[in-house]
Figure 1 (cartoon, helix red, strand yellow):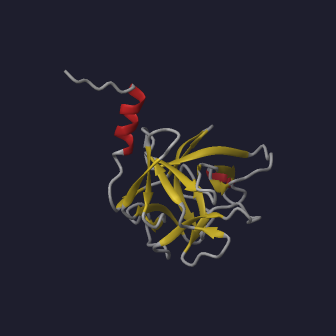
Figure 2: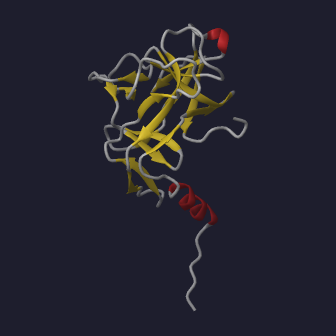
Figure 3: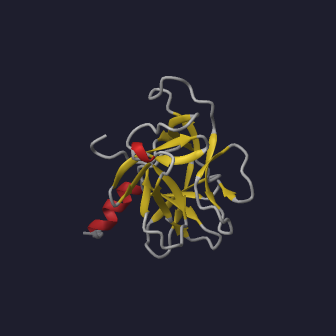
Length: 197
């Protein structure tokens, strides 16, 4: 009689990794200390997470992302796999069911600043500059990661209270902040809404 025994964490991880499907739409949510699953918003080209629609912006909407068909890549150190899109982009569109009027953006790519960029704020673009990386997003289950220039998968997301949206509890979304700013909160970005949403 043959039997196969796998550690429980491996079985549960395999279930999570296998949930990704081709060409799906989803929201993105920030999780961290005192940041319990805040949804992603487009605010005049900036990436913002907030408990409600940010008030100080001209073109504001919650974002629904689309990811092309993922391919599975084995990760050597963990023995599991990462879902990597064929072109690694995340395309954002307004969630028009949540807004009174149609925002002016469509098919905007989420970007992280490049490693040599002095500006660490994330945002959306239709025409990325050399300092805006739009094609390095990968999935580890429902966790969003970014592939760096060395081929490593990293999660260097953080948020900081928005000075222009302070009254509504919004946070600006940042990538790879290396200074010791006490107002910066390390977060993870996930495609799963909080249970209280």
